[in-house]
Length: 350
Ligand code: TXA
Ligand code: MG
Image (cartoon, rainbow, N blue to C red; front, top):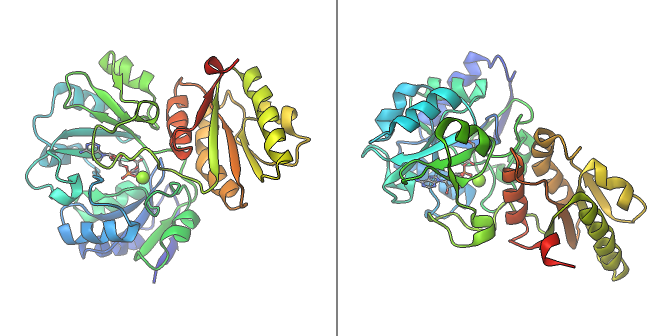
């Protein structure tokens, strides 16, 4: 039985939080909102609870999880050899959509880190998440609350669709405000390296740290850490991402959609408001993410739109890219991974 409990996102009911925290302390699983996506929480120091967590998600044990904390004091309890840059980032961006990879303390179970000598840590900026972590009194391991390989959940309803009957409780505080996962930064390398672009833009990190590297596994192949499978965030239809100038994208969207529709395919389009006039007359299923100038809105609507298109039984989804500035990098990463790396670039085609 999975209980869904509604909550005020700004003022979580302390009694409900206390009950959820008790479930976590006893080794149970509670899904909760963060500012990025919904997480599936378990006691991050309890190997049995972690085993249940992997089981519920259907997640391979080779994929390490993020430990969520509510106070800076918890950082040195979980990580060692914390460089000054990590403290600077923590003070500037926590609570927020930033995850730091650091050498782990022995107290962190191998199951949490997939046997790696490092641990991923984040302090989320959602009042419900912070209240829950504080009440539990332990770091909370929380991957996105979806079945492994599915699209990440931004609402309690999405969590229920994937995990009903497999977890104890879902705290429902409405849609997640950012809509894509945190930025994962590895601080154990000579140059800080973004392993997964996310809700904290690269530019914000560079303002604080100077140049950072981006490990762009979506576009360049093999993974730096176990568990970083390229095909992830995946809808069931085949997906292709168009990368290039707006005019080229609109031309190609129309051309490709027309061709595949003529061949009898059911075609979906994941596009910007600005693209709509170019395709509005076609019998395709259209999901508009908003204006291409509003990257925050695009990020927030991305996963719900992918779920929505996915539910319409399509053969092919043509998605458009939004560049690499700010949140654009995270949006591209998720699109390209959902497409299993299938991209068409203006520079490669006449
Ligand atoms: O926004 C988020 O980060 C959400 C919310 C719930 O906090 N959580 C999330 O967790 O996205 P998950 O498990 O879906 O993604 C965790 C990412 C994976 O890409 C994993 O490979 C990476 O963090 N990761 C975890 N531990 C790591 C480590 N020790 N070294 C390198 N990467 C690590
Ligand atoms: Mg995930």
